[in-house]
Length: 142
Image: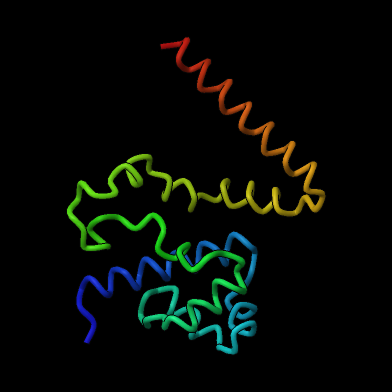
């Protein structure tokens, strides 16, 4: 029987699985076919209903082109079972919510559709420059 903490961790890993799959524009069916599962099983993993074993997690990491650690990133202290002051800096910026937004997904998908690495690097530098200029303008306006 899974503990409440285990259930929270399984749900977190499932959300990260869904986020990466969605970010890549991959359907549950396509991911399931890549690892020999049905889309219903993928749904159960993404909801945290079923626990993902280590071998299966490794397969997902390979197919989704992420390190296994990706599935545990951005875990809040309450999910991880740590005291709330540990790892709080990681959560404080609210990055998790921003990564789930539609505009973020669209931007990242568009970025990865750029096949030329040099152009992709320039696009990344351009966006970073705009963000720095916007932050500077906000500071001046305060």
